[in-house]
Amino acid sequence: MADGERLICASEALAECGRGVRFELTRFGKAQPAFVVRYAGEPRAFLNQCGHVPVELDWQEGEFFDVSKLYLICATHGALYHPGSGACVGGRCAGRGLIPVAVVERDGHIYLVETS
Image (cartoon, rainbow, N blue to C red):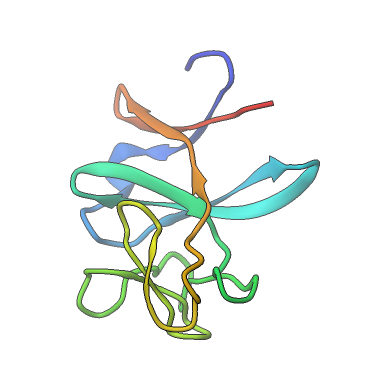
């Protein structure tokens, strides 16, 4: 693990378009929930916060994809987000996407890249 990185999970914990892993990070001095999923072979991480209203997305712990496995979905509002970019693609997100979180995959693990 490099300086400025924190272990989130083992790479094998993330199946393509499958269950995500929740974690917390510190942003602006506050602990905030976040999650990581695997999409297009890469780990993609975002704050666990809908672009419409700041509620967590997962409909069950770690379940972020809609039934089609094409989009991330807010369980409260039905807002849809592109899993590669976090961009709003439909629903009540009013064009506001998810806030991305920097992660890296190396040596069989996913790490949060902590910034100051």
